[in-house]
Length: 303
Image 1 (cartoon, one colour):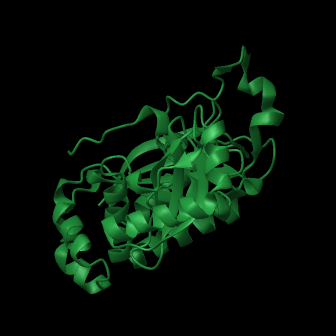
Image 2 (cartoon, rainbow, N blue to C red):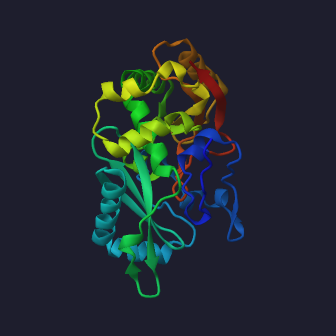
Image 3 (tube, rainbow, N blue to C red):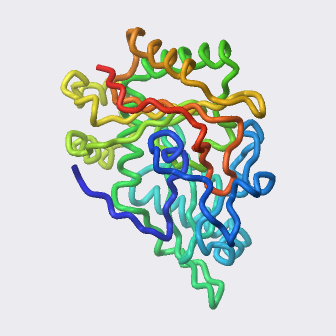
């Protein structure tokens, strides 16, 4: 598996922490006081969360500079994606990090995906370094792969969305607010789930083809990927649901029912599923719902 370079100062992970990891602890000490003692400051009902309040470490000043120069930032980031990836994007949130700003974007058209780029800022001179836009290694490529995977299996992903919609209606659950989807930069995603790539190696020719011509049809992409040869463990499908009502607690019975529904339903996307149900609140600073009372089922393989 191709190793990804992780830049600590621009760590995003965001919804994946809520959906796939049991290591996330939202009661981390902050300024001598736990976040759980400041629920009114940190948590908001998931239905109300639009990404407002999301923060990266030491990004206050750079965030201010970037958003005061939003037109410049947008122009530079759009140019970066057009020149480097032949992709047009819409810019959503711009969040300051220690050395610049992290810019969350959404691709226009198909394949559809969410990702981000980083634009450096000279804080002393309050200058946007327009020509130095970059992103973490394989971050954008993973998003492209996930978007193509979602396009090839569009019908199956629609089936998954419909299945989850039925579950949410029956069990008083919701997904995230649609306005908050971009803040996750979670590749191929919607309000209920996101898709990430655990092993890029089988898909490297796809990236090369995309950089030659990203405007291929679903049929053309399908001819390049033999889905039967794809190891389900190389594709991660993370499902994150929330209790619809304030103070309602997630329960094991509901998540077991969701697991059974996925196992017993045909014509769903191949992959390794991670299922999580959280209470009604989401941490607005981290954009995660994971807490001590969250319930999870991990590593559910669907062939």
